[in-house]
Image (cartoon, rainbow, N blue to C red; front, side, top):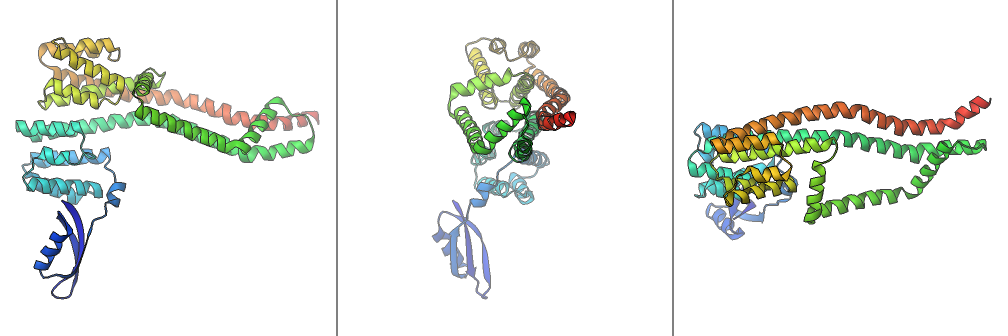
Length: 397
């Protein structure tokens, strides 16, 4: 069914409008005529605003927490989604929750209703909800999902902040340099030319770079844009290139350890949440691999699944991958042998989420002096190069 908007005149001559869901326009026109409306105009509801509105991770976290609280309080699912729909400011969230409520009212299961909104609920979310429905512990599963989503969003935010800070500073520094090269250095160049004196080598180099930048700035911009576009396309479509870049990211100096710890924390948190929800280990590992966010980690997890299928242990392929620290594999091995795998995984996740916290704080402390040195050399070097001829003239006088 589709959503249609309608306008019509009532028996009293009042102009009315609204929205209705139906298979086609004729059904809506017929229903309105039976209610006594005339001058009926019906058209499909524009979805343009929904395409613009996206569901953020924070909104999914808030939705999950709200739903967990309401289901735990014993409210019917229809009422839960009705309240969530009315309380959200995002039109896409309102549409999705309204669709789910309508589907549940028509007799569809919660799992199937949510699976119809893939841009809001990923496969992991759907599988956990399905496990909760089948085992009759939906409220407990939703609480675990809420905790998982909150911790996953927090972890992603920490990693993003670690990457954003140095990149943003470098970009600003390059923009300032470009402005100096295009607008400030030419003024100094004209002044020095009027002197007729021989310029120091650093000054000549800066002026030459400035002249080239003024003539070919568009070439630089086009080259940067094309390089980023090609990189993004290859990363998206070329599996071998994607794997190599993911492997490289885990071995980068400074940033690599943070990404590695974040990958371990995500693996442990996702795996532990799925096991706690009652999902079979083999099925859990498939979902853990899909949400790994890194092809190297995904390969290690899938190898572990194959190992279990062949009657071997979970830890052997994890050790062979070289990604997971020995402490992690030892705790997983203990969890396997004692039947407390869920507990061990959650402890690993807690530990490495704290490790990411500490690593991000340390990175900020380490990068601040390095960035200051970079800015000093770049901007300070330009300023000194431009003032060297003036200093020489002052010394000659």
